[in-house]
Amino acid sequence: MLTPHPLEAARLLELDTAMVQANRLDAARELARKFASVVVLKGSGSVIAAPDGALRINPTGNARLAVAGTGDVLAGMVAARLASGEDAFEAASAAVYLHGLAADRWAADQPLTADRLAAT
Image (tube, rainbow, N blue to C red; front, side):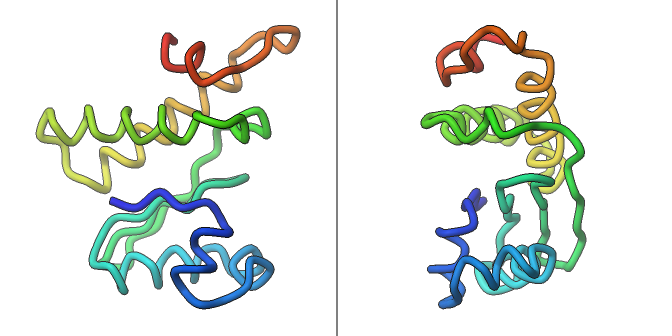
């Protein structure tokens, strides 16, 4: 399982970040194929890609998830689902959705930090 943000994806694909951002679906699909792994390309409309070419675009989440540590929370959410025996693509899709939903439901006047997000 890989959960890169666009700069990390660009480095893995030997591209620049602008190219990844301009072709997010292709970048996620190529990472999944190249590393034979489910990939979550984080960002607005996070893309979940499987090595077989399956793709999902997540509708939840917002810029508040750019806070340091929130990616670690997402990784933990995915790991928990994998540990329970869930298929990797489904585990990633569900975790990304719930992670974004927690950020969407967070009160606008409250700071979002990784430790608070993990507690939701």
